[in-house]
Length: 307
Length: 249
Image 1 (tube, each protein chain N blue to C red):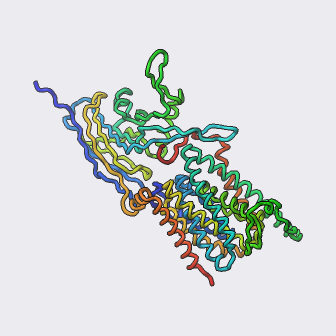
Image 2 (image 1 turned 135 degrees about the vertical axis):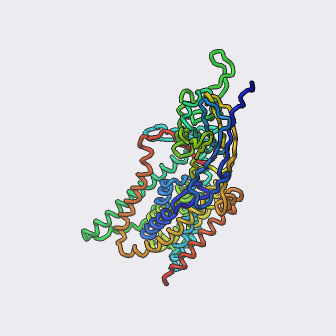
Image 3 (image 1 turned 90 degrees about the vertical axis):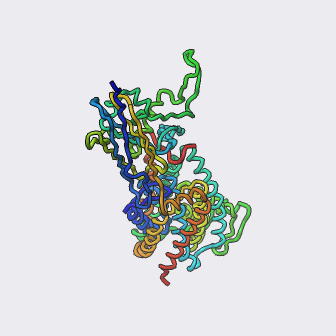
C-alpha cells in the first residue's frame, strides 16, 4: 500500500515505513538510544529527500522521546536542573544548527557535511564503545574484576567559573561544560536528524561524571526540548517537515520501543553494547564510503528551489 | 483550380485534471486526436507535454584531498518540471535538427541554460558574444541535467508514443510519475508534413493536490510556524499517550 507524502512529494510504501519505525524503535528500546542515526540514512535510501528526512526525524524524535521520558520521570530518574541547563544549550544549538543547515543547502554542501558528520562522529563513538564493551566482556569471561572507576573528575571541570549545584546528580560544577555539550548536540540534531543521545549519554557519564541512574532520563529531557524546537524551526524556516512521514514512523517507533525495552532485560549490558557499537560503526562507515569512492554519476541534482 | 486546404490536427485529453491524493502513484494521461484533410505525403504527429518550469540546481562531484565533494551548484533556468515528447516515429526521422531545435521538441532541444554563468564580452573582435563560465564543459552540464531528470522519470522521449489507430485518428499515452510537480501542464500537438510543422494545437492539464494532501501542503507553506507547532504538539501527544497506554504499573 503506497502512500503519497505531501511535503516530500514522493510516494512511499506505508507498511515498509511503519516496519522501519518498528525495527528502529525496537533497537532504540533495546539499547536505550534514540535511533535517529539509523533511521535518517534509511529514509534517504528509500528516496525521501535528505532535507525532509532530517526535518521530519526531529518531530519523530520529539514524540518517541516523550514516550520514554514519562517512564523515567515516574521512577524519579531525571535531574531536572541539569536537564534545564543542557536544554538551554540545546536551544541555542538548534537555532544555530537550523540556520547553518539552511546556509549549507544554499552552498550545495549540505550532503557533504551530513556525510562527514556521520563518518566522523559515528566512527569515533562506535570505536570507543567497541573497545570499552569488548574489554568488559573479555574481563568477565576471564573472571577478572572490573577496573576501579576513576573518581577523579577532569580538573578543568572545576577550574571554570559560574558554578552551580546539581543535588540530584551530586555535582557542584561550572555550567559551561553542560551548556556547551547541550549546544553541540543541538547543532547535530539539526544537521544529522538525530536526537544526539549517542554523544550526550557517554559525555554525561565520562566527562560530567553524573550518576548512571539519572543519565538516560536527563538526556531524554534535553533531547525532547531540543528536537521539539528543531522540528518547529525546520518547519518554519525550511518547510521541510512531513507530518505524514513523521506519524508513520511514530506509530512503528513507539510500538517497537516497548518490545525493545522488554527484550533488553534478557541480554547482558556489555554484550548489547558490543552489538550497538558494531551497528554504529557500520552506519558511520557506510555513510562515509560515498566520500571516498569514485562516483558512478559525476553530477547530482540538488533538491529545493533554486536561489 | 482550388488550392488544397491545409491539413489540420485536432486533439483532446480524456481527463483534464490529475488529482494527487494520498494513494497517488503516478498517472497515465491519454490523448486522442485526428488529422483532417490528410494528404498522401508522410504525416507525423508529435505530442509534447511540459510541466511548469522549475529551475534546476546541479553540482558536480570533484575530488579534493582524496574526498569526493560537490562543486558549487549551477542553476539552469527554463527547465520544465516534467517533459515528455511522444511521436509516431523517432523525432530525428521526422524533422531536421534545426527544426526540432526551433520548436524545442525533444529532450536534446530543451531551451535550458544557466544565465548566472554567462557573461557578454568581446571575443575575436566580435562584440556581445555570450560566453559561459563553465567553458567547454557547458554541454556536459546540460546533458547531465537531462540525464538525471530522465533517470527520475521526469523527462523522456518515446518514438512510438503516438499510434495511429485508424486513418487520421491517433492516440497518445503519457506516463506521469509520482514525483511529477503540481501545476498547469501544457500539451502541444504538432502535425508535421515533409519535415515541417504545419499545424499545432495546445491543450492544458492541471495536476493538483486534493484532500488532506492539499490541506497539509498549503498549511505547511502558507503558515509554516503554526504548522510546525502543531506537528510537534501532535508528536509529543502521541508519544505521551503511548507511554500511558503501555504503562506497566
